[in-house]
Image (cartoon, rainbow, N blue to C red):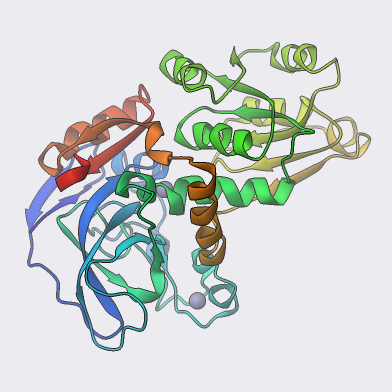
Length: 349
Ligand SMILES: [Zn+2]
Ligand SMILES: [Zn+2]
């Protein structure tokens, strides 16, 4: 089979490798959709950030895979040939405290924690070897391109929104309208938020947020954003803010444009932020949450909700590429002039 590798200089290398054979507790998936994440661009494509066991280990790229089980190893307990599945993108040891909570992202085992597309082969290939315990059942109502975004993208957002709580009481500010910001808009709608304000710098993304009706108002990033958000919210600011930008100014805006007793969650990775604790959070009784990825059990629940809400993450996919055009997919994603970019196979192309 052919797999795509990222040497770290903004290029893609294709290599032919043998199709893996599933061992005990493992399954072989025929890949159907594999989406590109902002962290692939930031930490692998341009340069290899992260060293040692946390770094990219020169494996087949792609940590947002979704496919169909074509072969089952010995000792599998639930999944069978023909099942459609989502892959939780980090395979943990399964028995440390974090793994037992379902947060394999935080697995503490140096020996066994391996993320797909980082330390073990990922989804930018025709087949993927996965551990059965990392799989979530993909219901027939959802496409593979829907499923590819459930673990890292929509799951990460859902986890953050569950932490701050979103309801019809809330105006929500989203700083950063890349795929994670757009997913935030989509989920906030279904959770009842009826005033959603987005901020970004890329015109294509701002337009997409309005065209897909994921934001009611979109502001161009600038020094007056806090005032502009207050003007749109009765002078008080939003009840909830979600930072998906990792930009220091945007994070400060998210904090300052949130009203008294409000809650802010940071999802965007990397970078810094500077704010003044007393006026910016303490005196106004605000809470800032950090949220990293999600758990397997919350993913299960999210999948059920997506079906109930008739919400399709694939609506955020603006561009689909075949595997042999994967270099164009990464180039486009790196430009930011797009929604979600997917490498697709068979019926998903
Ligand atoms: Zn991701
Ligand atoms: Zn573990």
